[in-house]
Amino acid sequence: MRNSIAIVLILVFGIFLFQTFGHYQTKTSLNKTALYYNTNTPDEVGAANVVTAIVVTYRGLDTLGEVTVLFLTAMIVGYILRQGGREKPKKNNTSEILITAANILIPGSIILGVYVFINGHLTPGGGFQGGAIIGTAISLMILADPLGTIQKAVLHLTESISGFFYVMIGLAGILWAGGFLDNRILSLGTLGDLFSAGAIPIIYSLIGLKVGTEISSILAYINETGNNTSKS
Amino acid sequence: MSLTIDKVALMLGIILMLIGLWGGFTQRNLLKIILSFGIFDTGLNILIVALGYLPGRTAPIIDGTVVTAANLASTAIDPVPQALVLTAIVIGFGTTALMLAYALKLNQHKKSLDINQFNDLKW
Image 1 (cartoon, each protein chain N blue to C red):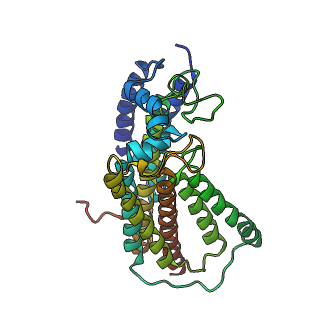
Image 2: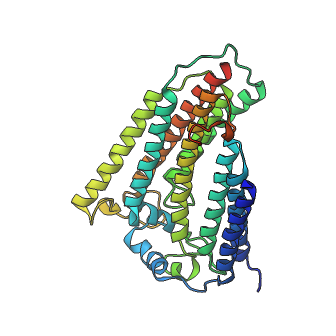
Image 3: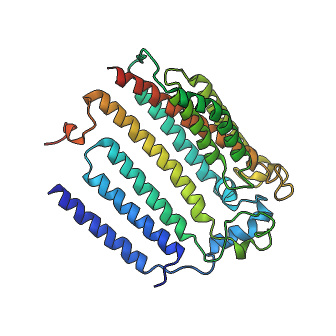
């Protein structure tokens, strides 16, 4: 009975989607917004990666909101999972292969993450992607050593400092440039250089640190609770 | 109707969305429901990215050879859907993490992940 309702709902939704698909036609030219961004990004923002220019500068306020949502998620996960103490299981039965591989891969993935968020204005990638790669490294670390403790105070401190400076750079944009989160508080430099595009590399590095530490603290909280349930 | 790459991607997105919706409606395990939400999310993201496609063009990144600052407007695709999807992926990660945390808490409470066990609000 319940399944038939589900099937009917999915059929209706599917027919609706495929109707829309039937009217779809491949575009041949950019629309007005995209044309504006693609025409003016090199002069106005100076970033080689147009997606980064949109995310960090043109739509910087949205990104601040997005980072806030992620921060709230990390806080709420921490709050929900912190209740109830932690019971350590007696022995660590991680395989030797995983531990050795993790020891080799962790430093490399953290450096890759840092590379991706520092070069966010030049190559594909950026703060969110780099932060996710750092989160992967931390997840590997937790898998290799589930009993180890992660200094969450350090994570929270790094996160708060990056968030604070992110907003401060945004406010500096009001004082010395065109508005909130304007990247022209520093010189735009030559298009394609590492130190170019004004404040974008700094803002994206701060976002990368913030996202990386948020993902890491979520993983740490879930890991500690997981230990708790497997015991009882 | 010729089947170009953007139509294939749109079709794939729609099919993934339907699979995710089906899983969300019919599965009984909390983890499988969360996974279904993830599949729905992925399908939606593929669909949005495919909408920005323009035939014969490349990624909106100035590399100095194929795409230069001068011909960006005529060689690059629409960058707006990609920026939107970046946001959507991050928010999707946040919601998945929250759902997993609640599932973990519910599992501690009832020692079960079957959604039929959680009938406190049922009448």
